[in-house]
Length: 628
Image 1 (cartoon, one colour):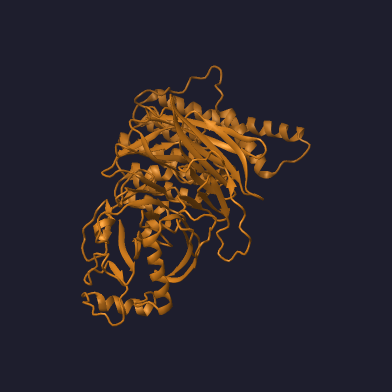
Image 2 (tube, rainbow, N blue to C red):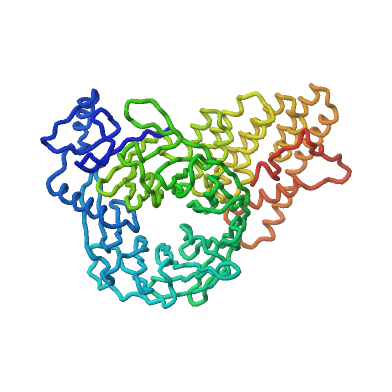
């Protein structure tokens, strides 16, 4: 559950539903103002003053800067917002660039530069910021590329001129590349135009490609500097399918297709977003459906929402997802599409899955949200109201609304630390399927400790439950996150955690034996390849008078006793033929490969192992359970 509080950065209370008795609203007050305190006011004031975290009245300098910023917000539109480590950049339609920083939920400093782009007298319609460049589309089919550094003294270069670029073109920028795209209607459909610009030395066009489709969006990769996803609608007359193509930018060679996907939908796509690990696409559709598409398994999950999903934003860890409507209705999901409850810190215990920003904080209910995004593992949301703006900084997100600025703080408890605490929360609520979905979103190569702790948390909770079809399937799915992962696991990680994970596989096998699932336990023991497990199955089969299975288990034990002698002989032959002594880890992996290949050969004249049937088949469907 998320606890929500608000910090209103204004001394004018006319725009807020502010009440001195509402402890969820923290507002600035003039020093001589008469305030009706709540019963919690004195306690909160003493606590916060001891910690020196709340500024109860603004300094004269910051008050003047804040008033100027609120005036600017009421007169110009916010085109782009870029949250950085220690400050936030905002670019306005009149060419003004503003940078402000926070300290303990209060404005610390505001830097403003008017006429940052002064090549035009007309308002700027489209612009986007990144860490290195500010790309703006000016009137007269011109493109301006400048550095967003307010301290830079470098002369601003002349804008690029693109003769046929319309006024409704869109821009996306990331690091040293920018994409300019637009579409136009033709007789039989639509024609899209894509133009890639490189900013490595000077801004120059490196590729320009036409498409016989409607371009929906361009999403740059966070993992590779020179790759991006292009989203197209092949048939604009029937926009129920979307094509996703992964391109790599080759300087002096144009664009090269790396991957291509296409999915069919029931309705048209309103918005699309790619997860930071580039494994899941999320689509918001016109029929209020939210769809998550896995690029690895090509599987999809969907959920109908009570709001129109106009704005989507992934958490940098790919574990959380924020969904918002144009009217400011906010919902939070995890990667398994489980909705989080939110509760305002106002002395009430009312919980809600949809947080309506209009009406809760603002006296004006008709607000329009423009964009929303997460930008770091410890920083939550960024968005913008149109023409009023929503920004987030540090552990909160900020809402500049026409004149006042509001900081909305989300206290998310232990889930703030990542996927492990989220999985523990699901396990506590017996939501094991949702916990397994979050487990699959963890990268073993990047966070092996978190992945292993999450796996053990799920297995420890499931192994003590009575075995049924659901529990058995969930245990297999949890173990398959290591033995049959969607992405390949590094050999070093496999060696480090193989012995630890196989202990849980052995516990699962004995759990099957306790519930007389002998056939399936035999198949699992074959995958693990441990001699003592076949002895356990042999004795258990004799106890339940399954003499055929007991004989098979006994023969497996005999085979495994003979196999080490053959393996040792083969290893000595291989070492004598080798001139160079390979590293120890390579010898170990070669030993595993030879051992597994020997284990899986069918011996002549030996009875075959029991074949899986619908009653005893393992849903893991993997080979070499003990060795990846």
